[in-house]
Amino acid sequence: MKRIFFHVQHLLGIGHIRRAAVVARSLAASGFDVLLVSGGAPLRLDIGGARLHQLPPLRARDAGLRELSRLDGAPVDDAFRTARTRELLELFAAEAPDVLITEQFPFGRTQLRFELLPLLDAAQTRRPKPLIVSSVRDIVRRSVSPQRVQETIDLLQRFDLVLIHGDPRLIGFDRSFAGWETIRDRALYTGYVADTDAPSGNAGKDEVIVSVGGGAVGRPLIEAAAAARARSVLADRTWRLLGAAATIDGADGVIAEPARADFTTLLRNAALSISQAGYNTVVETLACADRAVLVPFGTARETEQTDRATWLAERGLVTCLPGDALSADTLAAAVDRAMQAPSIRGRPPCDLSGAATTASLLHQRLA
Image (cartoon, rainbow, N blue to C red):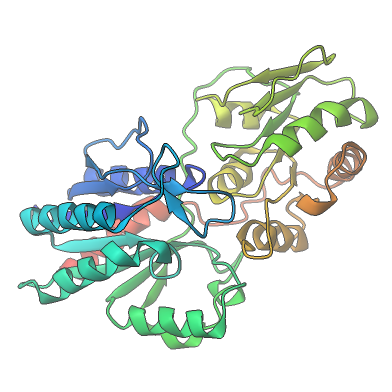
């Protein structure tokens, strides 16, 4: 049985590890022996027949994503980096995998060069050499410098394959990565990685579902939604606020609760989805929702969500409200526009077979 060593690091939200878990589950179901190596905060994950190894965890110090810290906020020192790198390399040597996958690196996760560059060295010098693969989502941030783009291109010379978890009919990787022409000969699109299995039922029927995922930056959207309900054309509907970072007390017609396992069931039944524009939520929205408003999280450095929401709005699939324009009034107006737009249901906009296609492509390459 061929073995896969899959490195993933979530820093702020949980989107990266959730997507990696779906891929790992599919890889294991296809016959691979998969070890998912997680460097973020420990989580309960459904990884099917895959195995999980938890590294000493790290997180982003803040929403800027520039600095790392331990989970308790303590700084990451050289001793911690050295110990974590040693653990990672010893694990890699013991696994002796046929495939090494780095999630998002070298397009991102550059704060982890201290361990990922030695891991690449170990993979390149191992005999037989494993297939070295970069797993990357549909969009990378455009705010990187030309020097950083060139560094990515140079590092990709050490990779055999780039698997892009997107669909070029919807969003081409060239729109966000300036070095596309130099890597396209080793890049393959897999389609989007979707986990849309949902129990049947009427949960969320005709409601407005407002979700902020597992991230730490959703409070403004939750609070704006609670105030926007009475000002919108959907003032007579129940608005369900999921993953609320703040308790919404006493708001008529508003339910605030933690994120739910039946999220895609809620989406299938809802009149409207309101969310940020992270990869997983958007894929679930495109697969399940009737209409959607996206309010992307963004900073001068973090352009990914804004790009995704803007480009999907260009295609007429969603209504986009820029995060820096968010208020109760602007959100209510966006809801009104979304309800006047055509339904996206029954308009399959993209390939959602990313997890299964990833497994198929790796089997083909190893054969």
